[in-house]
Length: 140
Image 1: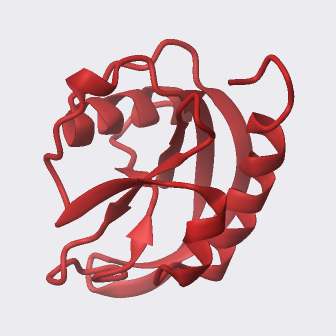
Image 2: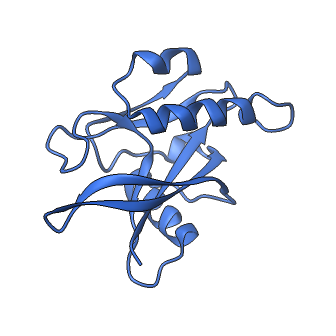
């Protein structure tokens, strides 16, 4: 079974780390999104998000928590398909380790800055959900 797994990283200031996808990306070029990607054969969603985070950001996650499971539309092997997406969230354990290895940019954004970004509606809904979680005492 093929699926995607993404990570929503946040910091102590309540900001969320987003990636600006490359203008040449097959799926959603130029938009701001979460880091992550597709599964490999035999991988669990947790293994996928850990591998993708290491590959794309040079970051090892401690214990990401599952935020949501939904579906996204993407091009896969020349076809447009709907695939399951597992979205995890975690505080960023080490900002100094971050290194952008995929996409054309990344940035930390306050929730109030995100409406001005080019972003998928389903990702905006997840930003609102994570915003409620990271604003609660003890969650930062």
